[in-house]
Image 1 (cartoon, rainbow, N blue to C red):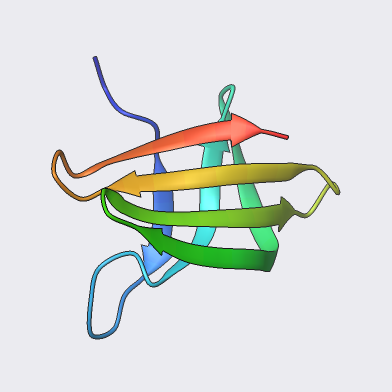
Image 2 (cartoon, rainbow, N blue to C red):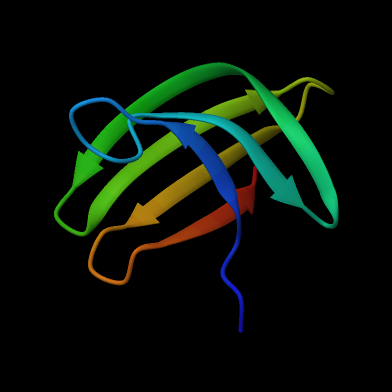
Length: 71
């Protein structure tokens, strides 16, 4: 199974700033990062895309994979 796709900008570490996500076959530009936090398993973001919907993104560092959930 192919994991969910999030494109991001990375500086010092991977997954510092998500810029687009693929959801239900559509590539959605992220217009705002509303919140970002770190948990022991990786990084989480609450983002808004250009059509106004909000998503929670989780990057799991152990398995190098993204999870996407629409809020």
